[in-house]
Length: 381
Ligand code: ADP
Ligand code: MG
Image (cartoon, rainbow, N blue to C red; front, side, top):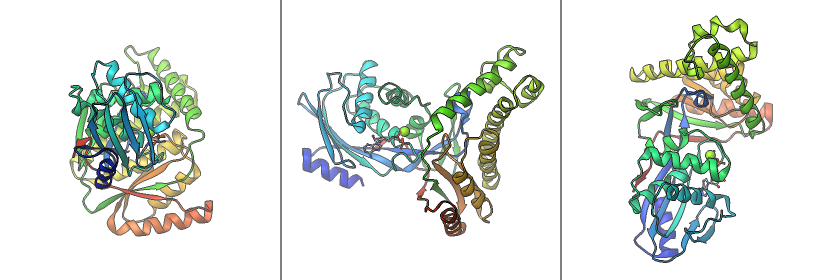
């Protein structure tokens, strides 16, 4: 892939390009916990956006997107948002870096990658991170990886209109092969946890359902969580988020809550605990227990948090019945997107065959599958 990008750079702009990569990500467990200031457990994957880039003496920067077959020339010193969506991410990163005092020169760049777009693997964070990382390195802007993650996040907020958390950019920048990142969304402290899973594969099965309900229901869930927090906060000082509420505290004030609010809050509290218990299991090399936490996460998302859909449920229910499937759960905000599964190698074919058959007979479509491994974060090649 990188050779192809480099070759295209040479054809367009000549020699002496520097090469960079930054990956997409998966999240193994910890869903809808980020905005409740809990924990998430993402890992970078072996699919990335690759970039060939060289500083330019010209006033204009030149960009070429291999995957769209489109190019753009642009004056970094002007503030007009590009028309093309892919260019807005790069434009946003440049603006956010300049806003924080970076002095960037013009550049010529060719980029492309193999992170599937819009599948929940965060191709957009990979794109922001590879440009942030490369420009930081080339022009000695001096930002830390954490600052680069914020630059990517603010690009989504300010130039794309997606009010995302920081997990995706964080994973793309901090990822390491054979490790996942336990990120505390309250403090932004993080710890690398081992994730070798010997004899296992990670496979994503795409429900092919578009998240049409996701943003409206997302807002409803946020409000329900806030309502639960407010109820407990009336009795207990210092309670500001679900992170500050234990299962026992929630049970104590359960009678004062609407049943739905209770179930939403309980899910979030339990999900944080599942994640922490799952990390203990990873440290002990106990992937069976970790997998059970993944199944538990799905159960909670489907029944208590109610953000799944029949397609996702069918995939997970099918996976659960196949010996050698260690764990499976919907990944992302819900109402569509992918199921992430951890499977023993010998169960991989049976899983795909069974899921595809059942899915086809019920929904008339064959779900796409995407194989991933846990790989390294942003880097110069
Ligand atoms: P995802 O869940 O993959 O992050 P998004 O909708 O947030 O989905 O981001 C996808 C967008 O990011 C694309 O529409 C495109 O503008 C940009 N993008 C992602 N990958 C590439 C790529 N390889 N080349 C150009 N643009 C890309
Ligand atoms: Mg995205």
